[in-house]
Image 1 (cartoon, protein in one colour):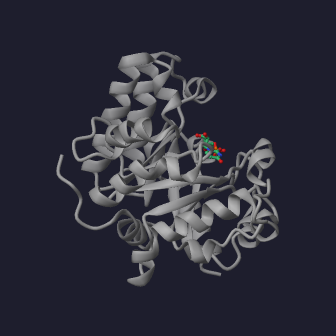
Image 2: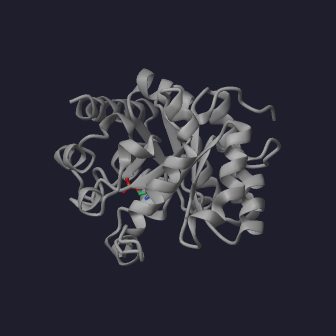
Image 3: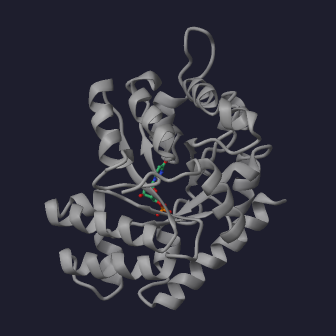
Length: 288
Ligand SMILES: O=c1ccn([C@@H]2O[C@H](COP(=O)(O)O)[C@@H](O)[C@H]2O)c(=O)[nH]1
């Protein structure tokens, strides 16, 4: 596979301007698959996933397949995931693979090659990374993303309430863990910031986190990368939450929605219409 020429952040910025700031999720979990009248097995999940590819390809800024729902079917599920990523790329749509990888540096190096390398078998435009073995342990994947024009979203303030236990903690220097992660991502985006472009290393910050961004000193404008924001819809976050949580950083927000959009299936046109409607709604929020 050839290396993309423009950096991920630049390509994402263009896609958000064209389609609106929505990342549509592909989460084929049992309940949703069965609600589409499909059997919960590899064939049903394949039908579900390929329907999503048809509906979202060319219609939204980015698509986020959740790796777990493919891995659960073993090697054949992973092969299906690789096909989903390839078909979306062929449709000209950016992919964010939600794999939440993180480990010691040598292992992160291999994760990077698996998803962000020039010849990655499951190549995505960006992946989610967990910094809870230390942000520095992600260095091989972050450097590789920069080298191949790809990107990463590092977990900073996740949408689940349990995340606060770790992410709200304070370091010896007084910064919060989430704030320090944002600062480190900002250093990785320094070049893009200098060019006035969106960086390729983003953060995951849930739209459900209330006042945490402000209270914990998480400097999103200074971070200068995209903010993948799950939580809208199925997890209870509203348009008002997006406005208040991300005040001052709204142009960086890429809202992520899985169940709220997927419930519109299995009809391809209905699914596409729902994704476009949510994208339009989020665009109105982030432009306000
Ligand atoms: O902080 C996070 C990070 C990732 N997710 C993922 O998003 C979807 C759930 O989205 P819904 O729109 O609520 O259906 C799932 O893949 C999670 O792993 C998250 O929810 N929170």
